[in-house]
Length: 369
Ligand SMILES: C=CC1=C(C)c2cc3[nH]c(cc4nc(cc5[nH]c(cc1n2)c(C)c5CCC(=O)O)C(CCC(=O)O)=C4C)c(C)c3C=C
Ligand SMILES: [Fe+2]
Ligand SMILES: [Fe+2]
Image (cartoon, rainbow, N blue to C red):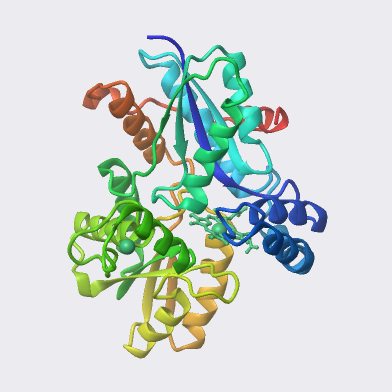
């Protein structure tokens, strides 16, 4: 077997918590036709004339609150994850190079793929940091990868891992985090809050894939793994089952709406209000559409939704941190990749290697971007 390149990809984040960098990020992101799926000229006017100039100042202020000495948390978690994965693959029987890429801004997919090519990989596995497939996220990453390699003389064999929302390794990793927090905070109720998407995006997939109208009906009956909403309900169900939580004790909802079009429901803000009306006083929120903490978890859930819950009579609000670069998650990614692509059973004793995290190793990687 030759050398394999593992491309780990997340959404992207601005290069700095400043107006200009945020505007560049939002413009690249929202000009993607898979994200705002309207005709180009309308999108161009909307993004360049309204959203980017007016939203960037407020969003830059939010990024400033989030920023650490190492940069944006989304990027830092990705760098540490990749660093640990490299250590694991170095001790494995397989010859694997690992690179982090962001769909928007840096490190770009183009640069990361060029690095893998320079290292002589002859096949590439694309691992999105999105457990549930959406055209706006995984679909867009896959399209970009194909655009880049289409310019190469030698197009390597490429494996796209489209989703792992129901993979036992992913479910188990999140379940462990939730279980720990349930033990600590003893909540009355668990809220699974996923990033939303416009309803129109689901309709497009439904028509293209020939799914029935009710495929994503609240997780009941058949589910379709390419229907983002349905996959989110399935993730909640599997995590809940694995920790022995009854259906009455958890709810699934969708957050982070942008614009006036209808997004998939139920909305997280409305759900939080309903839960308080039902007398829920102690709420634990978990967001398994994100495998790394970022603006949408730390600030939107950790501040906005916390305030909303407390203003409506809630008393205790806690948020389960994401998988970030926990060894639990590193092991899960390693196991997902090696069992799927290297067709190997992982011996129980060989699963966990001791990993030494050095800030300087992460920093030097960050500087080379
Ligand atoms: C988890 C998967 C994600 C889906 C699905 C998704 C869809 C989606 N997002 C927007 C608009 C914005 N998202 C923003 C931030 C953001 N989104 C995700 C993930 C998903 N987005 C992440 C991980 C982040 C955080 C990045 C970070 O640096 O912390 C933003 C930027 C912030 C803001 O302006 O509020 C926007 C805008 C759309 C329109 C969409 C589906 C069509
Ligand atoms: Fe988003
Ligand atoms: Fe559906």
